Image (cartoon, rainbow, N blue to C red; front, side):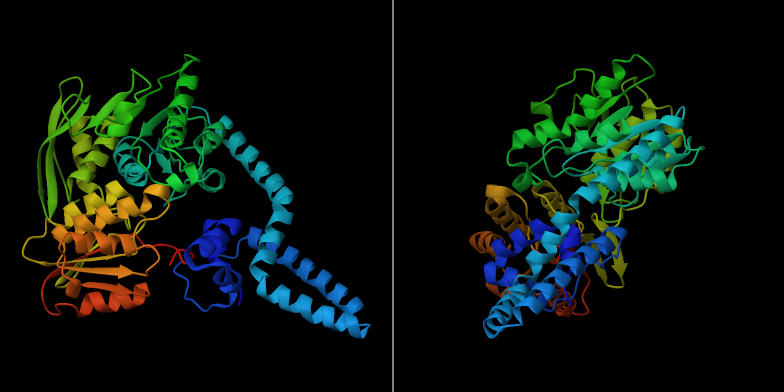
Length: 477
């Protein structure tokens, strides 16, 4: 059966490119026929149904041509050759069907977008908060929604719905007249992706959580990443020019790239460092939670505690506290809200199974996030520490450099390292070995299932903490 799940996850032509890059052109051609369990369930959407119809028409055309060719002996030979080519290049046929469907899909998408714009325009008094960043945006979205819910009726884009059509779907299916605030996560892989979203929702306020080298392969340069992330604050500034209502910009003042590219002097900064408008101090981190003190620009302060582990979580919580406080949620309500904050699934989420604790950071990985994850793993003193990872991707020319550094960092923290697949883990292995990590405690497995089995077998019976860092989609491993 043709495996369309990898196409659906990343895009039809891009999945072919990744297959060629990681495994070679022969593998890419035969990809549909290679049995491989999908990590993400294939969803039969209306778009997929239309794709199947177009694919069926292409196949029918092939049969008609074949029928004509079969009328002569020479034609039969041509037919057999065409049949062989068709079977081998089936992935390209699916990509062709997708290309043919593009004009229709564009018209359908535009209709949905216009309908979402209408809903927002008719929703008087709705405050729209955009959140973007190379990392941290989903966590800040969840935390901010929890804090704002202490006072307002809030709708947020669910899970990782951060593409134009994911946001449009949320608006069309979830928006109610009683909602007072819409918290909208905005993702980007290419230049101007954020502007495409802001042109739909026109945010009143914006939070820039971070800027880093995530998706450098598709952005091509750090300058493009900076420009695209700032498109959110540009949209807020544009709306502020109307001089109607309050429009706030928040930025993570601890992020080096943001500090080096501060575009708006009126942006409200948050973080752990001195000089931020909203600052966290007296941070105490244990394996069971974190306490810290928050000081606001007006001098008001308070002691907070959360069940979440790690300084990076405090940084993300500070973004939510800054925005919620400026939007009228009092400090005592924020304290209660922070106590109720839950881990975001697959984002350094701590899950305990008896003597085994899982630090699930499997959603995706970036250099900063991987470093933070290892720092969190290091908090668990007296326990066996195991890293399971397939490595980091989409970092362009810096991919090997960052993966090697990741391996060096892991060697200082981990008792065992389990690498998944060889395509993206060679640099990690090299970094760990050069840092003096024992080769007897470093393993390379072909699949996540094999790695999972091994991680439970290692030091069986002892208390251990397992960091799952990244879980690449099928077309990478």
